[in-house]
Image: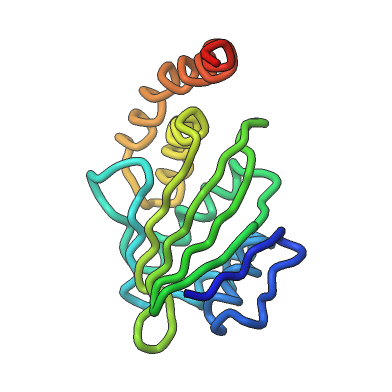
Length: 174
């Protein structure tokens, strides 16, 4: 297993395969065009928020990232590691001033392009905040219908409850 640890500024990008290197650099810079060029035509994105559906093909996948970039700030790639055709990118961001950590598990095809992206997000308050805000943006981009905006709106009270619990209750438990 190869590891490329460190802060975004210290990552040894030269050790990464070309499509992963381009993806990491473009992600840090929110360069959707370059990110899309790294995707296999049959790419699938596995949502961190639901098992109800996937996002299929480069256009849908990039609509998710474009929508997320509108919501996220302070994007940093802190580490990259791999085993065979699987690459894992660890990043930190903020959403509405809250810490959001993400893992992008990338599976490469035989040509080295990204064929599957599985996203993991923590902590729960940030993940649910993202869910509560991303639906209308996905609808605007034609990736999801009106139910997406409704589902996002329905998650707002849960996001608020989790943020309050995280900020006021959890610190008192230790």
